Image (cartoon, rainbow, N blue to C red; front, side, top):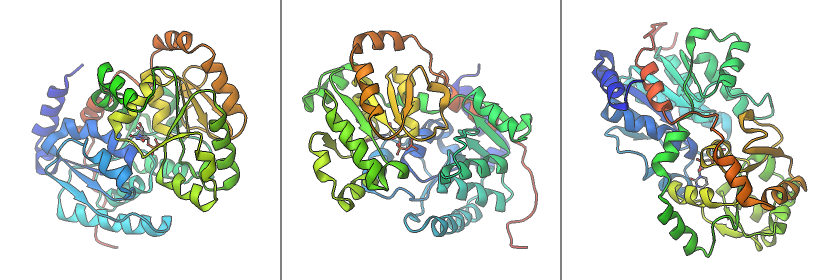
Length: 387
Ligand code: UDP
């Protein structure tokens, strides 16, 4: 296995990379977190285009500070508005950057509007496209993210699949095997870099009057859970009834819904926090008795932190943790039932989960992706000029 330094050397000493390097397009908190290991690896050999899809200070600024410094960081500020309008404006803005700054390869991560816009802009410039976190499928066509994933995977010249199952999903859709590489997920090394040591984690807990294994940590932000008062009220009631303190970093989307639906009193039993900086959030997650979340990234992180996670979703594109670290439940009483199961023997579950490997790899995903991206063939299918 090559070391990070070898790969960085190989990528940045390649003449084509030197001529332009990699351009990473992202626009949300999880993308910033999961692309940080690649930015760290590429150093000055890459530029980052931040579209501004997440523009709320609490989601952006607190995570941006942890991104390794890059000489070339373009902020587009094209967040907000209707999805179609945002997609159009983002393609156009990324297109401008790609026209002004030569790239050898464009890298997008995940399933957001920003990732799809980056993929389409790369395609319009006939630039090779690398999709990080390829091949995830929820098979839930009501989720815009599912359509984004499929579209990006089929546009990509290189699909970096975190797991073997993700590779199988791609093969089932006739993506050629030579376009797929199984890499693991960069969240593993992102987490290892950001997780504070035990003594600092203890201080984070002490500052909030919490003790290890004595509380639950919950996050919610998916439209299916927070855009209607019914499911949101059901989930908040369940969280409020848990027999331990529930720490609840409140996502801005959820905060707006709570206000709009008049559900503020359901927050009263919870320890409501602002969205946390990544290290502080990981400190809280590592020491929690149980996690309750509808987040994609937190499902993966649970398997690295060896914590149980109750996934409140009607579908998941991450079935790898089912039956080990994770259990999926609908909004409603199953949340409390599953939490009770984990809470009845926290120490025993901690011991059992400790030895289970994460399905998302060993922390070498970024190195594998960088190596594979360095050898993506440069294709020329046309010009960026309108035909
Ligand atoms: N996260 C964070 N602070 C918080 C809540 C979450 O840093 O207060 C991190 C979390 O550890 C994970 C990511 O944000 O890495 C998940 O982002 P989100 O839930 O917004 O998106 P998803 O993963 O569902 O795409």
